Image (cartoon, rainbow, N blue to C red; front, side, top):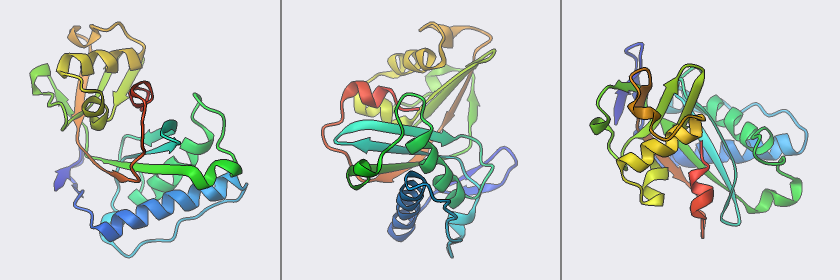
Amino acid sequence: MRQKDSGNMEIDLSFTSEEKAELLRIAKESVTAVVGGRKYEPPVPEGARLRQKAGAFVTLHLHGELRGCIGLIEPHLPLYETVAEMAAKSAMADPRFESVTKSELADIEFEISVLSPLERVVNTGDVVVGRHGVMIEKGYYRGLLLPQVATENGWDREQFLRYVCVKAGLHKEAYLDADSKISVFTAEVFGEESKGKKESDIAERN
């Protein structure tokens, strides 16, 4: 699947199983290094898809519960660098959690979401639950939820949009306001599937 970014550059999200495994390895090595107080520089991959600029989120789970989730929305860095940086930040810089400890490393499970470019929508009916992630902006407020969040919680479109508004710190119906900006994106999601994820934890994902 190829997507075009705002600069009309193509982003290829058709990753092979080997490429997915390589990104997961980079994420794990990055977290292991940062938790151990070491600097990590990911090796430059051979595959062109992993060197393309793309936004991505890295989600950490521990014993089925959310342990960190931070991402870069805009495609500013090569994907492999984005994954390494976001993995480290998810482990150490998610303000909702204490930093990951060495004793937790063996049990951390990783999930990576590689994002397509954002696309502005005017009609909320264009938001497709299960396919689209959503970002809502209004003034200085901004909130985003990944596409899998709606599916895992069984939300319909209106529920999904309301939760994005809450994530942004807005009132639940802010997506209906004329000055609210709604953007959608798709994501290639892969990783180690957590068992027993709690609904409240899923809803907390960025």
